Image (tube, rainbow, N blue to C red; front, side):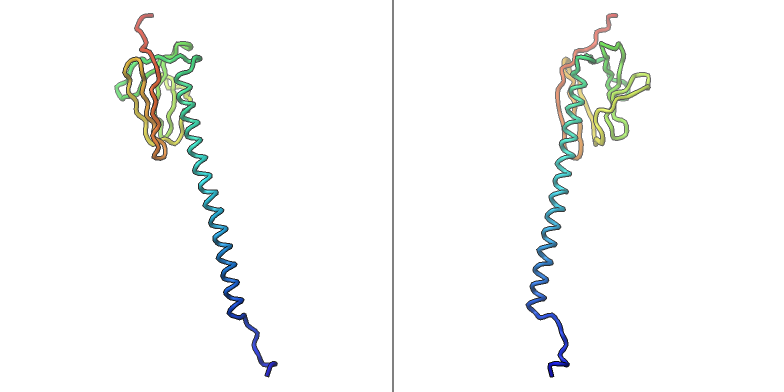
Length: 149
């Protein structure tokens, strides 16, 4: 009789295999979640670095920006005292850039922004930038350019 017996897994062996498989899946999903969370936290720090770069550029002693005017389309015009040039601070697609008034050349300040707005109330330029549902806000001291030359 023992010769005709079919070999198969026992119920205990199947349960042990299922437990080991589910523990493996839990381990894999936990590590994927950890990697995903780490990538999201790094993107937030990149945005913060870009924001600080923007502010340090506007407050830079090498540029010494002054408020000049707001164009008809609402784009702010900043005067650079060291280079004696005017620059536009504007949103170009999803980037915030500093561009020469003549349209040539630009310096990207922040990438992948959702919104940009500003308000000038002497002596402060107040800036709001929205990136991935996070709003950055700062007041930068910026004197108005006098019309004397």
